Length: 446
Ligand code: TRP
Image 1 (cartoon, rainbow, N blue to C red):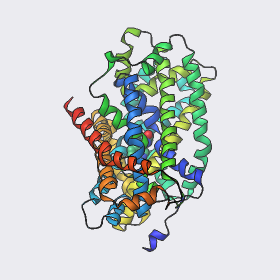
Image 2: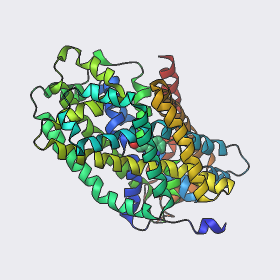
Image 3: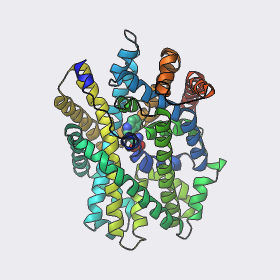
């Protein structure tokens, strides 16, 4: 147990929120959320999304924190410790696999952000007239795409291995608010464009004509993905929390911040897309067709509407890459710590092992958009909800009630009403698992 004593804990309160928010806020909010929203018809998707955050997102994040802090172990070891000799360890293992699958396409998008950062710096982006063609050219240039994906993977590895990780958490506390501010400025610019109102309507005015039967599964998957729940990422972070960290409050703060960033990203992209696309008749179709390229096509177009476009876009893609980095660090950390602690492989070797695995998946994703899509869909719409389903059952049914209450209240130091604690257990025992299962089956049938 020697190495468990040595586990680091987050020093300051703000450090706790910053690290968990750093994991949650990433490409999921700024890249994936808008394209999912476009795909699922706008405002109704957002409503369902917010419902998912409230009814199972927040309770599940609390649960992951709780499992992590109660066990002080990696995501698979946590189940060993809290439920020794049972099959619950498979939930942890599924999470590790999910981490691999997510990184297998996520790193490719991280590579894109680096490419766009350098295209901004070199002035290339300001000179582009056809942004769709610019993005397609990148997708077709496998060498470039793979090269930058590898760069990003090793960048993540570097931060995992060196103590600089704390440095990145500290700098994220300054840089993430800056990203937020930048999004606010961009939203104002986008909304004041001619024709932007239609974009806002698409985002905030529910229109049944656009709704798809898969909207529930899409929104649920996106909520898990965006909050980094369902694979044990927050279990690992929870294992670093100290005894005073308020689990419920932290989850609420992280979820609110995460949702704000996502909605803000939507308020940049949709007004811009509607205002800047010539053919309004087919706008929704082309938004959907934009698919994974939406962000990388619409935003540079918006920057070109602003004085000093080069500076805005360089700043934006740099901050986006950093937001993505704090997310990839959290993903890679889960998988690495698992291999390190469970198989007793030295930290350095296990990190390299993970990096190689991720690069292999990333190379295949670069060559095959359908493989990319397969990894995206199977993680967000299958693996994360399944993981979330089992975590809710684990905390709701398997864990000792006294232990759960002690964790939630920090051994009685925080005062929650009995009603609150009972509601939490009720959500985990019945609401979350039944809703997840129902949405899952309905989504598959649709
Ligand atoms: N939440 C991150 C984002 O929105 C991605 C991420 C990091 C993630 N860790 C995760 C997603 C764990 C699911 C599970 O970009």
